[in-house]
Image (cartoon, rainbow, N blue to C red; front, side, top):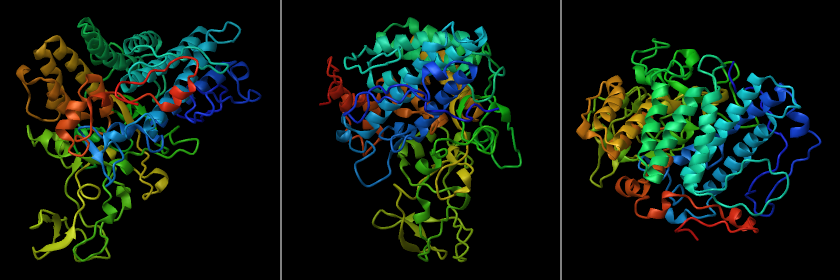
Length: 560
């Protein structure tokens, strides 16, 4: 049975760093749900733990500042609007930016607070839990706490480390250093990895040992870069190897087609087909997915949240395209309605494929580059591919059936661009205009574990093994193999883009490597004119600084 089942989110606690500024802590009445009257048996701990899975998944549905915000203003996509939001103008990235506050609040209020509640009570001898249950709940809480602090360290640098339940107002939080936060993450994840079960021994959708070692590999890479201590790269290699070498479960790169073979596609597209994004479906590459599939047991959403937002944010606003006859000629139908927010840059659309245009990840099953008219009320064009050309003004326009150029200009920022088909999916609640799908979102995949290990080998100077790991993925994609001399930071980032676009929080990858400024300047023409070196980190929310009256909460350099 899947993990996301009935969610109880009203567990008592107090909220850390309330974003409103007027109240530093929000207290929830203790007459219904409190640690004392709720976390008293296995059922209570199970509900609290399942709420953590929901909270982690809610990163994907956090209003206008969700997981997909991690790609805007990077080297992959630009804000698909004609205004300055979405990091199109980095001067607007201030301590009062909505995303800056929302991610902070999500981390401390929704994730860390819940983890600390569980950890505070799970080893209480007065509570009747057997040893296995204590270890199970403790391991999951430590995993999610480490997972969340890793995100905080990457986005903000040093942050306050809160390990206890806050039962009364506190106004003197102090920032730890980034290294101290990463060391804390390391400890939580190492302890979680020792206790978590091996894949296959618990229900699909839960966290297994492999997830802890996957994240640990990234954390060790971060520690190596932060401390300039190369021994951390050995630890990163060891952590990734536990997953790759099946020491913590049977994971493997899928090299043959699987699932519903009646659907046109290739093995890479099979990874992301509806109902094929979990181990239950035979996808042995998935380490952890955020679950949305209401048509599978335990899926769906809760608390009024919608489904997987990827189609809405990644798909172009094709419903606005008119045929040469002037008719609106692309209906949402089963394609779902996109709003063109994550508009791919030329780097994604063209540059990364020049090394090998036949790379499977660039196939029509994985990137849709040809549009077809699908409005039966316009029979002259219905069912035909859209032909385009560049007019004398340099505009992309539609071509009529007789070969002449029409006056229909295509908006290549919002409405007409190649789209990444990982975001395809069955409409959530059969609502094709809502833009959400019921497809699970693959959060961790073995392919990225290989890329973590390749990066660690590279940073150690072991270029042959780095190339070998990258070639595991390139071989699956029937792409040209590379040699040791080809491995660079830029090539690793290019390969991550080819393999992980949509799945990867690109901002966090670039910030972790310290190359966000460099890459945005190079590849993002809209954001590159305003990005500054200090934008490698986000600012601390101003509401947090203002509320912390008992101690200085320093701001990151470059922000007022």
